[in-house]
Image 1 (cartoon, helix red, strand yellow):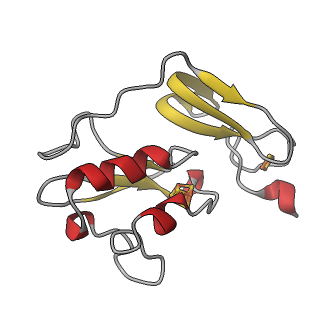
Image 2: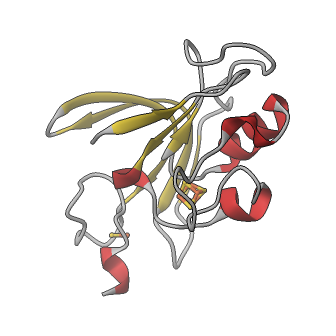
Length: 134
Ligand code: SF4
Ligand code: FES
């Protein structure tokens, strides 16, 4: 799990590719900032910081994050959902939102958003890696 930082003037965005399942909330939400056809694919300064932050908070897997400690100016720090929710509905991974402390083989991970595997086939336990589509 490697998280890369995309540094902007007013907000820094981080991305963990191993957690992304291409739900596309980011590219649909702010195509000027998130464009998978471009390098770098995230340009944090291409929209107001609060708009960037709002789209990051919509990422259902936690692949995208910002702050605390990553916000330089212009956007309020993300706060976890209260109460914590888990969407275990049919046809998708288990989406969790809240103040998450996740125990993995590699140690404990903290997150505000995560998509957990429900099919048992993932190569990135406990997170969904889209293996359920194979
Ligand atoms: S919203 Fe999150 S999970 Fe979906 S494509 Fe963007 S980074 Fe990946
Ligand atoms: S639910 Fe997606 S890999 Fe298991």
